Image (cartoon, rainbow, N blue to C red):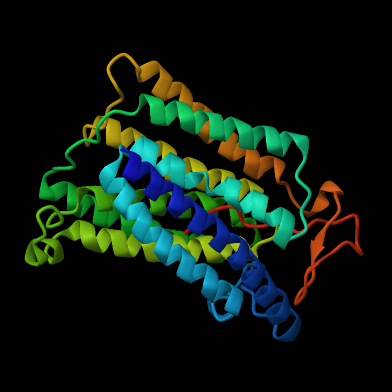
Length: 317
């Protein structure tokens, strides 16, 4: 349990740090591309080309490397902990992002944000105290095929919706990316050929390809959300999609459980953690709140325009 918790915390730190760097890189690229070539869809959203350009900035590259490290650590945590605990701890990367944003993006956290952060930290303590052993993860192969189908539909459908909705797609992109990351966590948990290791069984398992599809789709949709204005609502949707559904699947389908007599504490901790994470995203609100601090395109935070605030993307890939 302790090793799993430390692994999940390390994944959260990687994801949170990566998100700040990705926010800087993707928004820098979006501003440059819009000014130079106007590469947007007919509905005002970022084009596939501009999204690819965002991935070429050094900040985004470093953030993506951290995301891959976080992915590996998160996958290990999903194998060592109940999903309702591992996914919730990982979603607490919002806290890391919020705190780093004070330094790297010049954002001033309000009392409501600090209170939300304290709620999440307290809720994680409750969850860790109440969590029991993780379930076996053994499921029929047909469910693995269903997981792959859902992952493909989320990725393909999300790409189409984002292009149709354009600049209004932030919340949709956030929710679908969160569901994709949730599918990834479930897929890692049910993978065949891991323990004991069997390369043939692993490569033949549809859940492996569900993990890859959900990961790539979630990364793309999350990158789009980073490029579209304020993403506070999108991040809240991401947290819900990433934690609630996988946690329920872990309990109902994979055999995850709390310690005997501590179910009420686990439920309380889970609800508080998700609510607090959503509150961190929501109170971290956007450019029209009138609080100081903007990020210069190539330099450190600037306070030349006190009526605006550059919001980081508080999610994770």
